[in-house]
Image (cartoon, rainbow, N blue to C red; front, side, top):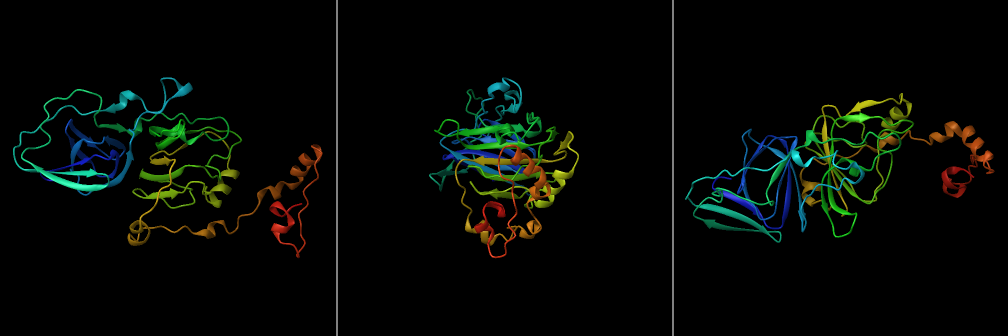
Length: 330
């Protein structure tokens, strides 16, 4: 971006470098953003990016009509999650340059350009609260040390982009950083579930293990809204047989999720032309079976005590499982 700058009039951009630093020069000043930090450049702000470490890659999420903001903390009060004091805005840093510059604008999804005879980065001072900022995600304060069950994913929320529907956001940006897992009598990995949100997950660094899909640093996983998903069967077996005691998770790892209330459509390029699409191996579930059968006598004892009939497995060869009743029992 020599003698050129970009301005997105359509929406705010949340930028996550995964490899290589980004030297982002804005009208308000500079931000050096490394992997492990996020930066937000709001709509209408001109900026350029230099790459001090050479080629870079990462993630960008764009939201329209609203701005990223801190989530409401409710009973947490003033402590926990992302502290306002940890967000950094640039100080004025201006250039004296009367040469020709090209400014690229994105308006209503279309790119336009214009030429001006001075740098856009000649602002000597600024005042106000509409300014780009960055945040070191390692500073996120986890609040997910629950005693039972699973905490709602919003417990990991760094920033939210609210919708017009109360209680429903367009997108939540969630951070998964090192923490303690302290639940008792609880399946610790995420259980098999469906939810109304579209989940797009990425990995900044480290290793994301045990999931039913492959995820490497710089990659993305995608779970559509209302689609069932969960851990691999091997992870299930490991998690249900290990000693349930407090343990550290995510050490040396930083992952994130974009938790969106709207569907996300993948481009033909992403699906067909990159050659990077990872196909899941369905055989990982081939030996899966109903493990409550291992405890059928205990289940029946509870049913009988409640005045219900015990479960009897249907072994009739002439009847299909669907005909025999739910889960092959009657």
